[in-house]
Length: 600
Image (cartoon, rainbow, N blue to C red; front, side, top):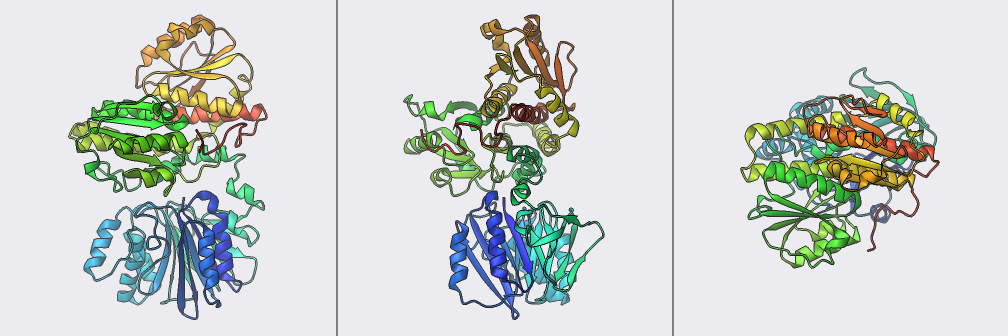
């Protein structure tokens, strides 16, 4: 997601900021900018696209010395990728960069407009700098103005702010998104970044800010607003820093899922409804059918969504494999909303299917992780998953955020069409709020998957079985194992095992059984008993003990099947990864695979 850097010192400020932003490119972005202050004057440079565009603008300007500066790479959440929407954002005499989402920005913006403030962007971030100046104009005290600003903000906001009203300082605060502050190796030098990598080589001692911690930095030192901080030592390897200490990018991305799902829901999950600023209600007017088209992992999230759309919004939903869809002469009617799903937005088969739907006059929507991609430029509307860049080839957090977006979209659809009852909607919203918690990885579960992995290195294959939404989850679990372990695995609807596949059952057939307490437990229990009677080796994943299991991964008891879904997803991802590790495979770069499949 978005990246932040900041600098105070006597070295080349613009170079340090640009170099720092380059270290954050791996996170993904659509625009970038820096604001630098020297001789009580602030210069700002912004550019769309890659950082070399920003670098060219900086190099083309008349060079001067700057005492401090802030920089940002932006991934659009509010407002399109434009230079006006790029950070840093300005008031009359101050600039701010911000990661996260200000949930109450609309109310604050309206209040500030009524007070005479003029806004130039579509972003939520701009309210921060206007709110700060509004308080400072009244108080003539930048510290109090910053405190008052922080007190008014709701949501996630990691902030750096500079102002000509106090030109030797950078004001900072962390709530939600990561932010690090460091003492530089040179005297009177302070650095900021949203990740370790920009700081390596420039600093040794850092503070990884906790939520609710902020302060004021200057060449004289760092003043924290409270005592809830401690100094730590930076790692020395940039690659290690990008992995945040994890062994693999895939492992890091599995652990990130709780945070990125929170980002995915920010500003969309309201007290009594789902809000999507990105789409107009007219998009679903007159729609009697939804057709979802995707490939691979995205296809599995689409299959999951088909159960949710029909159950929650009572609209017919079909799911198509994009590589097959193009060649079947599909029947496309204009009362169909055509949804495509892609992590990259460049998947060739899915893109061509989208173009077919557009040519047939259908309304189109893309659920994607990359703004300004081919699909987002083609479709009528886009919902970004906000998963951040995914470096592991085997998709993890992309699937999770896609599924959450589609679940929210099913509720949005049901509410807009007055289909879903109020009590049912409230139950679903409560469950959605619990998803980030269900994705926090318990050390005991991870350790259990490590221990179990040594038992599943041989044999003649795996069956992953589940019912309802747990069938597409079984498909996804099997795909993860195939991708990174190179072992044969199939996902199957549990009730279909007796219609042929059970012929394979023996002790060397490993069955991974997804057994949720809240959805069809007795049915899948019977299916697993059938396999156990044929001497298949059973590993059950469930909140309930199952006597016939050879191995058991326990998840927490909840009151909603989708919370069980996400806990089981974590278990499946970890088990696949640990089996791959045992086999000595390249977890992040499995053989024969590419991250973005741009060919048919």
